[in-house]
Length: 79
Image (cartoon, rainbow, N blue to C red; front, side):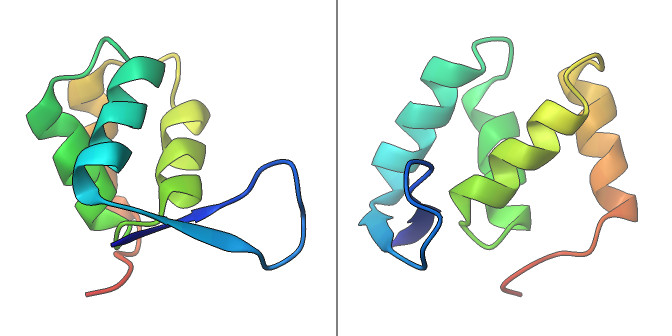
């Protein structure tokens, strides 16, 4: 299961998403990415949706390939 912080509630409330649900959510939010690219990003962040989305939004002006290249400079989570 993947962790997802509820964006409407700043408390520590989390809900679990299956891998498929997490990937599907990312695909609906970031259609310019392939499923493989999204998988790489999600796994880099240890399945943490909020951190994955934050990274993607921080580099929204970059291509998916450039974002994946930036992962080398970002600490991996959950490994």
